[in-house]
Length: 131
Image (cartoon, rainbow, N blue to C red; front, side):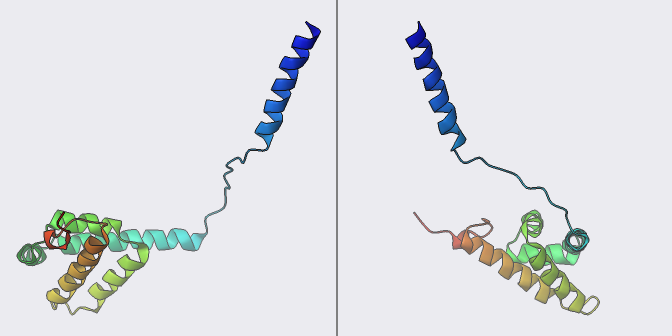
């Protein structure tokens, strides 16, 4: 019985020592800076402003003539990075009041086209490869 106890104990000890050598995932908590929170809040307000722009009737009509669904465009705006949202919102700021809607629609079209070609979205059927 003594040898059986030694065998079982040695196996458990070997398994536990080998288990200590395994890499463990660790999580690191950190403070989130005020600047990051402010940028995130600003990006969210810019997204809402772009959504309200897409809700306008003249924008909806123009998107439909371009073959883009408004809901798809809104989903793509939600998927944009903060930098891309700032860029599109900057284009909105540069436009004259009630002015060049074609410019912003072209910008949205190009963003959707590039993301469609890269495979992130499936908006346009002409960008898909035929298999």
